[in-house]
Image 1 (spheres, one colour):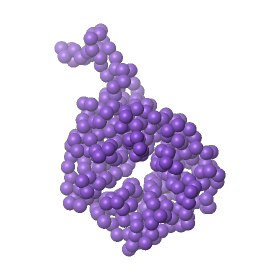
Image 2 (tube, one colour):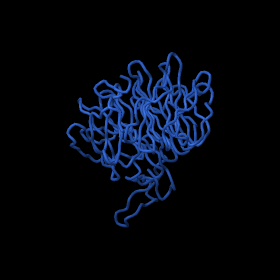
Image 3 (cartoon, helix red, strand yellow):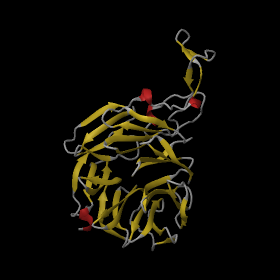
Image 4 (tube, one colour):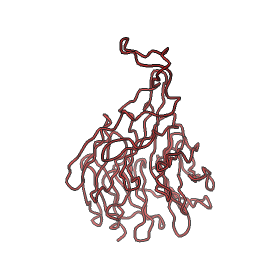
Length: 363
């Protein structure tokens, strides 16, 4: 049963092959953004239910770095590469449309709505490379054209992907199977952080004391917080949670940084980053693993929303350490803002995408 203080505002659907389907406000209209198995971008209007589709610009999806290519040119007569022709280069990889959007998010690059994709393990696999995945790409939401360079640096697939707006521009942050955490300033086209974090990494990102940070966990029994400007660990590793850690966030409450994490224990853990001590007992209620987590500030209260494999999402008051209202039906996709108001986006097979007004949870 849903809490009658939190009725859905919109409904819709998705064409995703990735784990989450972001919602973005474009020209005042809330839309879902997804990429299907054929690398086609779908944008669906949540008010009218109409969808538009446009292919991603796959001809530009390859990396620009020289080592991804080798000497050779295509010989049309023999239908193969001539490795003795030194006048041309041939790619060492083959693009896999299915793998190009293993993870996906959406954001604004300046005033431009964009889609960010993170590739799977075989994103750029080829006959000369057994695996070479994890490429990150930024695409124009309106045209499907790639913006800037293909961002490389992961050997295996991207497992978590998000964006962080800063005063200097937009940061794209990704974590991968091998535990590599990467952050790129896509406004200026450069990498700002390369960090070795938890294997098969879960990751969340945001701001602490005005600094962009990432919170990481995975197949380890601890959680860590990283300064993305310096690449340094903030405080100590936070312990007391069992693997696998899948969903993470950091928020400021009454002048202190609170780190939240959930995973296969079905519970939400909270720590004070400065002391590295847990804040009370873990918050329980889910009956299966927590896979997604989002935070928001509503009526000057820090709240979190968790999504679980039990088919529900739950809203928590982080300062009080208590659940707000009854569980929401559907799995949490993301927490964002629409029309200036914080909302939770959930997805259920029988109800599609639903958007919930979080202000009603605390009102």
